[in-house]
Image (cartoon, helix red, strand yellow):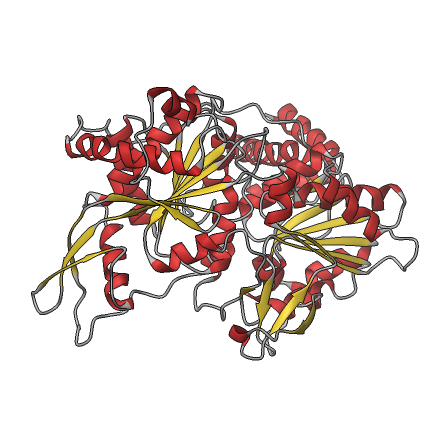
Length: 574
């Protein structure tokens, strides 16, 4: 337990006041909110203040991550329960669900949360404001729960008529609030605090500019620099063109990140990894090919419609692979501690999304580590990077008109399409984009490295040991390497291996009971099919006979012991 986690627990159990029914903790991404929540749950369970724990997470992958963390804390939570299942299995202390599932059947979750004295943990509580009815559903489901713990990685503001349930607000008198409200946390642990404690890594932002060229609807070729664009419309199109996988900006920046990872791996962080964040699935696929062409290594590609997406993230976190390319699935809450570099190759630019995404590379494992974020040198991103160390409330945008599947994925801070040029009617055509190192942004200061002496070979080697080179020396080295990277990416390498991902070998699973139950249910389903085929019986009849032979609830709600006995009975029938 870290000092802030102990302090938050002490405040929760303060004998001078009544223990709260609602408790909001705001802790910077990477600080350890999950550990705190499970420590609180363990204490409440041990003292019989509660008998059940319900966790509500933004995404399906985070359900698994929460369940595995809870298992390590000695709390068995089922992340596989759907809205089609009734009661919680008797050998479980609770379950993990998503905000989308709660919105789909709030009364079911109300029944589960009130059947026993429950602690409801709402991870990234600001997601309760993502849909027009989500806040109402969360309130309906958990309004009568014994205790509620709300967690968020970023303090937030909302409009007066868009309050998130179980959150205390005060009027926001800041200029940009326009009469809004800001959340009030019971315990706050900001990025500055975490940085001072060594809980998170300091972040160095490497900004890359370059000239983008595109053809507008009138057939005219327009050229603009990312860092010199004069209007928002031109800046938006220059940015969009730079991110086009057919240009030179993307491979140049990926090569720069590859260089950084090589140094980190050679000097201190032997398993350092890089995340490439794309705007959509088509770009993600194209970026994955570029990563393989530039680095010679095939990256992990994580797409939301891939049924193995969560498994790929978990395997990447434990593997030695260097790159993962994704859209939004690793932008919030996903724990990949070895990730030290992030390539911002997306058009998203909301403060909330930026803080959460950068949070994926700031989790510290050892003293002296640092994180590097490679990003386009455009004003919206540079402003967000400059404010990284300031404690500020983020605005929650109005609910987007997207499908529930997209919402459940966690991509909730979507950027509108780039503004069109005046009179433009058709989609523009991207022509080319060049990349050039602009500066390093650290502590709100831009350092170009142009006025500094060249970095020596010894200093260059030390760049891999985070903290031994100053930000100024880092800027000088990146500028010095820029020309070499341009030559490297200009020479096409041999074509990448043929597409197709056989996938790594199945990892050994920790013996969590929900894992065991899921495997047993799958095995039972297969055995029922074999028995039905061998005896010319309908599947329903086999299931009926099985329930008679081994009494108990349906498989989805049955305990591991019941599932094992049913499996053994089916084996005797085969």
